[in-house]
Image (cartoon, rainbow, N blue to C red):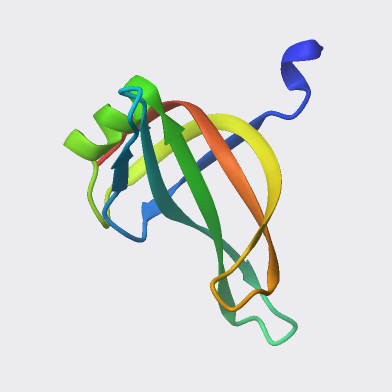
Length: 109
């Protein structure tokens, strides 16, 4: 059961090309967003599709692979864990972010 703790699995389409950053210690970071869709019928019997956006973080070799092979619109399956962080933006406001740190991904289309 320990593998179920803080485990996220998503399948969706990328909303942007990877933003890859290289750090001094040869470490790489890639940021992406993924859209997941859920469809259902409302009270009137009409089909409704809701889209949720999720921020993804890739580190190391996964970041390199994401930067080399992924692009906006690709359908991917990811596995990772949820993380929360806060930071101060350029205007001095405290912001909060919920992100999925990706352990593995597969490009589907």
